Length: 94
Length: 102
Image (cartoon, rainbow over all chains, first blue to last red):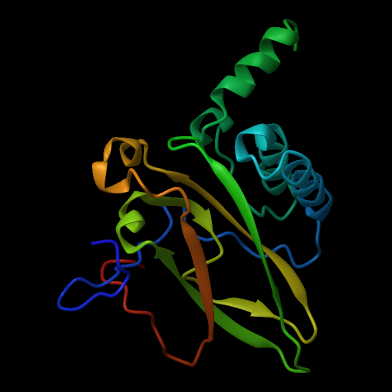
């Protein structure tokens, strides 16, 4: 049955996010990164996989703010390991 | 979006009034059965967020679809999952019914 009607005891139980909430970017400090990401999505026909580099850049922006908008987390742990590996292959001396 | 791959999505919220609003949001996933595969790494939800008068903000959600989604025969015909948020004005002392979350 693929109806969305839920009779009986089955109710939707919202789950909180793994890493908690994002503080709001009240000053639009990362808006430019968001715009670049959205531009990529539009250009790619909303293919999320095509825009992972820019998604990563957006999250990095959040982490790098003086007043952090996202707690520091190694990007490899956020599903960007392959992009990081590519980056470090391209630049052998950092 | 590919199951297992992390993805970013943006919503936008605007406070059209001339008073600050403190809101809290909760989400819903359709189809219902896909909800168990939807994993939020981080989002703007569940915690109170303050929107100043006339303020408009971007609200990001960083998530992934559990790779097991691809193995579930019940999900074979699901190619569209809709995530929606409802923003409530937070009243003092109000807590969303979320057992075990604090």
